[in-house]
Amino acid sequence: MITPPDSSPPPLRSSGEQSVGDPDRPVAGLVVDYVLGLADDALVSAQRMGWWISRAPQLEEDVALANIGLDQLGQARALLSYAGRLEGAGRTEDDLAYLRDEREFRNVWLVERAQTDFGVAMARLLLVAAWQSELYAALASSSDETLAAVGAKAVKEVAYHLDHATSWVVRLGDGTDVSHERMQAALDAEWPYLDELFRPVEGSVVDPASLRAGVLDRVTPVVAEATLVVPEVTPARGGGRQGLHTEEMGYLLAEMQHLHRSHPGVSW
Image (cartoon, rainbow, N blue to C red):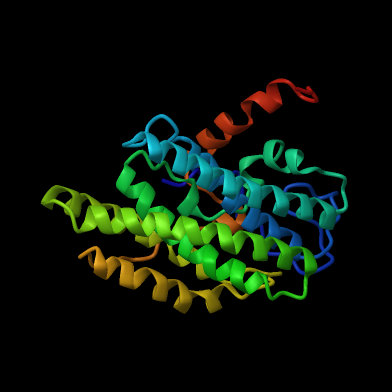
């Protein structure tokens, strides 16, 4: 279900135009929205990963998923800080994380939906980590020094995320009849949202479409080893890069932003 927008989707902008959400806010080019999209992907995924703390199937998994979420949060912080500097409006990483409204977030639908089923969490982590592995490797070779530094650090972190997801997908997919069935159902549920990661984005430093083959090369052998099948599904509509989100995004932001908005300017 899609949250009905108040108006038509905000148009993609050309360099030099003003940003979506605040018509008076100048930007340093379309790369700002691109960097925000990558930051929001990591930030929202970290928020979803944190839900599993105290809920994972075993104690060690609580720790593992917490560490994965912290890695993603670190990536988000670096990218949000850079987006704030590029924007030139004086907004900090906290401002961008906690004081933007739903329509200003640029993350894809894949990361924002609830994942209260462990199989879904692992299927999603497999897809996100495979995509981030290709993305950050490409960013590490970018001429943009900041994005290259973020990519070089993050690519090492997401290698562990991918390995962790792989072990669980194989374990569940090639386990009992019940775990196999549930893991396939989880993969089927997440696969429609993969396509949005490869759609064109104005201002992109790395062409999203160029990552598709590498991502599938990482994911397909894992699916086969898990005795699962690659789903044949219609891609979801998407729209996160343009500020259109699923109904669940509003609830996620309410939880994530509540403390900061309730006590503005407080120091701890």
